[in-house]
Length: 484
Image (cartoon, rainbow, N blue to C red):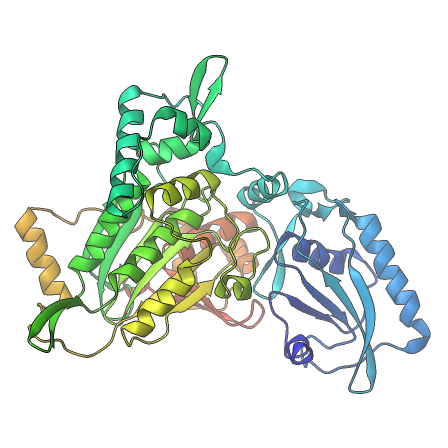
């Protein structure tokens, strides 16, 4: 029931106030954050610590509701129009302020300005948005896709254009699609190239599809021993056109999982332990929906018990987790999504999650896990413990033999070297796992925003994981070697 969800505890979409603070700014941050993220409800008359329904006195009920409406109107830019209504729960009256995900982003506090007054929801708290997040919100509000913007200074060469056109044709043929010639005119129609004053200009999508121009455009792949990131068995970093990264990453995973044989009557059939179509879908989705304003990389990790694919950027433009699981889709990178569709890499919009779930079910695997964070999205496909006939070597041994056979070495780092501040953060958190960003800033002697930026990177590297609530939770250092 909706009521059960509303009063079962604070979350990304629910916040409680036992009473209205004297200063409206304290709860206006939440209103703004809801509008900038996935919407939500601010409920007045519920204790945020005990979840006890305290209620609001009837003689001040409508006065408080009017006060909230006026505060929202006076404090928030652009205009936010919440739905404010009383609701009776367990014989007591509470005020429910419902805010929809806004379309005119970014929303911010007028008194603080856009740079300092833009807030988003992270887990169960409202936090000031980083500059890169504000930029993404601006693009969402303007209905602009970053990959369709002009890539200033990037050349449009006949050679690169011809290769991209030929590769699109090859992918179409491989996917069994109708064959037709692809020329630069199609690339212009698909907004991959632009015409301006008789010149052809490259978009960011064109650069991503023809080169390794952007340093963040790479797919980091690794095999780990066990169920965490403590010990590497193999690691690779793939760059170049993103569609080649997808194929190389899929091949990497297939090389590092078991390939066995099953007997169907008199016919012997080879079969991977994980469905290749699900692996491919996970990696395609990561590239198609990633946040290109976030300079992190896509990561593909093979563990003893699962395959994990992580892409930068949470859900896009107010899309909720529930909507994603029900097949809804909002396109973050329109140019790339269009090309993937033309190549046959994307079959139907919003079908990726369902295809992964169906493939896992057909294989008899545990249900895949989908996790949404404030700055990343992760899909986990779990491996079965069964043994197949004529099973290949353990993944570590197979991976090592493969490296020797092709003469490769694993010199690519899964993450960049930690800077001085990040090393100090790890050292302090190894001594006290509950230190806040403010406390870390005091001990290290830098600004809190500096700490928050570095913590964000450590989380993206897979080194730090946050457990529990922002107030009462703790940090886990995943890479055990860093604690020594």
